[in-house]
Image (cartoon, rainbow, N blue to C red; front, top):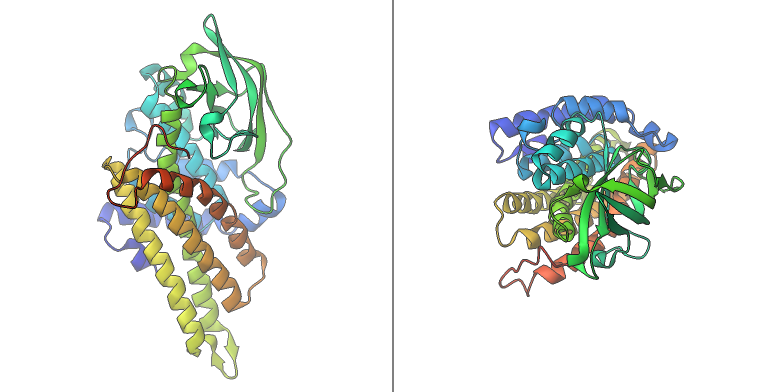
Length: 388
């Protein structure tokens, strides 16, 4: 399986893939069940990951990032997710926020925020979803009224990963009229008067990353914290989420990868009727199907990552396809693992719970796919105006 995950990679990519696999096995996997059971946000573990360059993977080196490609990023997140999918998923969101500031921020903003985000001395959250606007992100209602050299924010964001525990909030808010062109992007720092948080959400899984509502009540944010120009926020959000889809799909790959390895190991050890389960042809077929779904998903995710890096016309479509296909297929891998091996222990259940959010998020990718594919011939790109 490790050979299959490394197939076609450069020597450099194989090296940082190995570093990520080793970190996942030694620093994450032994603790993931405890993190989930006790709802621990593993700050120090993530900071050790940042020391390896995983805090700003595709952020430019002049502000502390690793300067790697989208494909490199997918490889790393897949490997890390074999250790703890929930924690890696949060790290992918943090990386997306850092990239947004690096890409759309001024020189001053980049040097103010990115270095501490890349070291994970500070953590970031992405604030787009609202109680009344999920996949229809362009209908968001959080308002930002310009008053002198500050925007006054009012509104709330829902289901924010890291909310309340993180330090930097990349917020999409309405500075203009209705629709996508009225949305801008502000960076709100923890401790800003008027910034508050809801109760910590109770979840079935993904408990190593806290989830809360983020609430703005006459929250004054300097104009200097706006990324890009007024009205550019929706475009920034969509471009960030294209990479976000690849990142989450990569997390699914890592969880599925771990499931296939656990299934293989179980079948070679467990004996029934005097033989190991690995000699049972039915279970051999199930394991082969699991591996096939994993490899096919990985190929599509990596193709999408390359397309996004090269800014190809089909990049948006491929990102949505990869998210749709990989999360569904990898979820099937996990279910097959559970059914074929009859494992209901905490370790296997942890991987099942890690998958639960991925198919739900796929609904948004389906909408993006509908809006970016015209019967597949040819691919069309609505990067600035399509829904999530």
